[in-house]
Length: 194
Ligand SMILES: *[C@@H]1O[C@H](CO)[C@@H](O)[C@H](O)[C@H]1NC(C)=O
Ligand SMILES: *[C@@H]1O[C@H](CO)[C@@H](O)[C@H](O)[C@H]1NC(C)=O
Image (cartoon, rainbow, N blue to C red):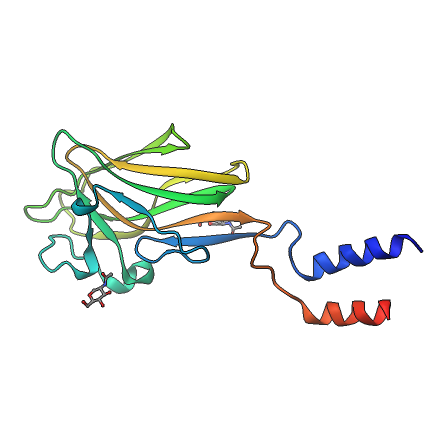
C-alpha cells in the first residue's frame, strides 16, 4: 500500500493542473506583465510616447485595435538607436507591433534589431507601401521558441531613421504558478483516501 501516497500526490498534482502546464502570458506595453506586473523599460524614456494620449503624433492608430488600448511609439533620428527591454521567464517570446504604411510628413520606415540574452537574435524591416495609408495591427515583429525555461531578456532596438510602435508581447510560461484547481477531482480523491 506504500504506492498509494505517491499515486495520490500525482493525481493531486494533475488535479491542480500544475504538471507541464503551458500557457501564454501577455506583456502589455503600458500595463506590463499580466501576472507579475513587470513593465517594459524604454530607453531613452523621454523619447517614447504613450500614443493613445498623444494628440500631436502623426500616426494615430485606432485605440480599439491595440491590446489594452495602448501602445508605445518612438521615432529615431539619424545616427542613433532607441530600445525597449522585456524580462520574462519562459520558453518562447512573441513581440507584436503596429506598422503603418505611408502618411504625410511622417517617418514610417521600420528597421529593428533584436537581441536575446545579449546575443543578436534577428531583425525586422518594413518599407512602407507608398500607395497605401493602411495601418497594420498585431504584426509579429519577432518570435523565438524552444528557449530554456529560465529568465530571459529581449531587447528590441529601433535603428537610425526608423519608427517602432510596440503594442504587446506574449511569452510561453511552463509550470506556471497560476494553476487551475479542479474541485471535482479533489473531492473524488478525498473519497478514495477517506
Ligand atoms: C503562444 O502564442 C503564439 C503566438 O500567437 C502561438 O504561436 C503559440 O502557439 C502560443 N502558445 C500557447 C502555449 O498557447
Ligand atoms: C491618458 O490620459 C488619461 C487622462 O489624463 C489618463 O487617465 C490615462 O492613464 C492616460 N493613458 C495612458 C495610456 O497614458
